[in-house]
Image 1 (cartoon, one colour):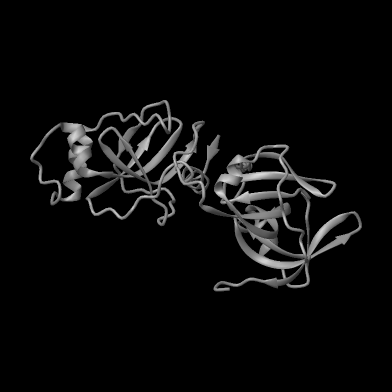
Image 2 (tube, one colour):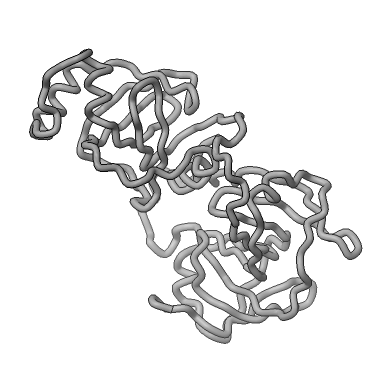
Length: 285
């Protein structure tokens, strides 16, 4: 499955521990194969020992440009079977992929310490999570549906406007990657599907000219949030009943990529549900 940086870093945080504060010298590197790209910080001391054996290089004070030149001259393929069956080729360069600087995940291969700060591409990880503590609380959102639209429509929304819910399907989302589809059976909320949210491909004509008003976005309609233990969410399977409190109001928050931008009241117009906008959120709220 193909993931962007935000999705895979959220996903891998269930498998890899957060990196604690590290005072050792590291160097940034892209690890590349045909399936994916990992952006990592590599511990210089252990990496040099792996590449060229025992040495007396004063790696703590070597200028970075010389260090990069040395590493490029001696680089070789790196095997990281957790991420891919295919070997990675290290590449030291200045161009960065988008990363969340607050998220740093630790892993070790052989004698080399790595800190993962970004990733993208195709990953097929089937093993169980490596993180032993499943009691960590997860803030999950319960949504009543979504609507595909464009940035231009969102930019023009005002208080009092109506936005229809075109995909009226309840779902639970935790982080930016894990989702359960929900259905109502009498008085119970039952899980019908669960899994990773696939990245929706954007298809445009090759001759199309970029229009900032026509960037496709998905608006999600949040009903409320609930905190679950991670172990409880990981154990749930299709067919299980999900205990949820009854919603005591019709106040709905509108989100794009997990970020709220408006709030309003759930209304019904004919056979369709919609939200009447009562408040537009501004920066700082």
